[in-house]
View 1 (cartoon, rainbow, N blue to C red):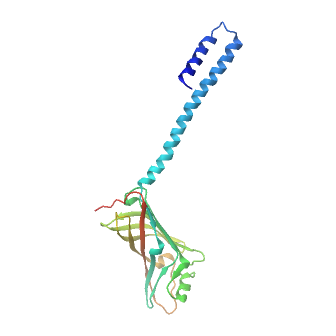
View 2: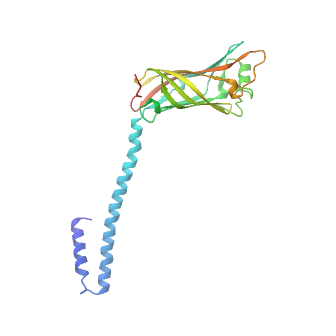
View 3: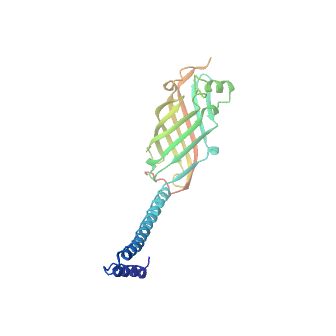
Length: 238
């Protein structure tokens, strides 16, 4: 509604509100001017709503732009394990996925999530693979996923980190620490290498393999290739 239109309505209200006009005429004019007023209020509310929506829509976009976004490439990465035994037991997992996410450039806001398909274990021996997949060890039929989900990242040196998280295997979850070292910090791409050790009996893997003496300690090593695809670099303590 422009200023001229508003002036015309105000003039009509003053003129036809006079007692000299019959009541039906005054009521009709009042209805018309009320409609015009309601139209003005609605327009103002619509403008306010649009501004609020634009502000809300822009906020998450701005937040995402301020956080580093990384992609981990499985093709150039590995997840391995080894156990000391009378006969070497070590292998890899062929199917897994890992993500590294941040809510800000502060490294402590990072979350590392590694999900492994237990049935993809490969020791190079069909007999060993079959035993590890069975109910005495990974129990892949009932617990197909092995997972490490970080809960806290603490920088322990210029390029080293202690990553505390929940480790789940055989459906049992316990806190463990993954010790990492990174290369290429601040360059946009690099590697994340680390080791986590756990006691297999803490997770119900109490049996052995016939004729093979197996230690209780299991080491898992990760070698991940990561690339920052958007956002600023992660801020590290020098």
